[in-house]
Structure formats: structure tokens, C-alpha cells
Amino acid sequence: EAQIPLGWSTLKVSVAGEHLKCYLNGKQYNHGHAEVRSAGKVGIMVRGQGTVWMKKMDVVPLDE
Image (cartoon, rainbow, N blue to C red; front, side, top):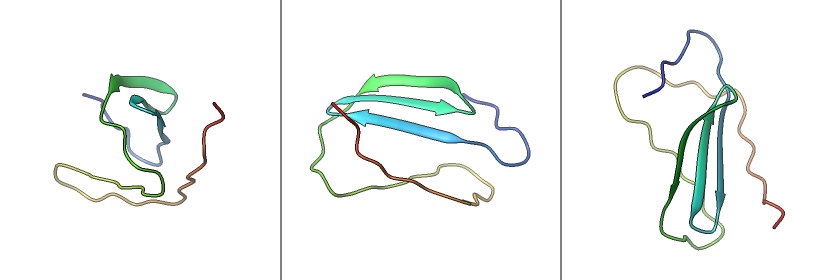
């Protein structure tokens, strides 16, 4: 589990095929594999209590 500091943080999620990695403020917290999803859809799930504010969200294709 990551301890999220007060103030703004940067969350980066990289998915290529079934391979995924998750970073919080530049530190990798997760590396795993999941089902391959069809192109064209993005989803966000937040679990727990509190408030999540998003200042900016970029969705970009990965160069393979």
C-alpha cells in the first residue's frame, strides 16, 4: 500500500497488452498482468474513503 502525501500527486499507469505498471510520484508500486482489453476505453476506480481531485489526465498510446 502506498502512503499518499497531502497535496498534489502524480499517478502514472502504463498498460501494454496484458502487462501493467503503476507509479505514484515516480515510485513503482505495482507490476503485474491482467486480461487484454479492447482498445478505446479508459476507466478509473477509486476504493476507500476521502476525496479525489483530478487537475489533469492524459491518455496517450504507447509506442511498441
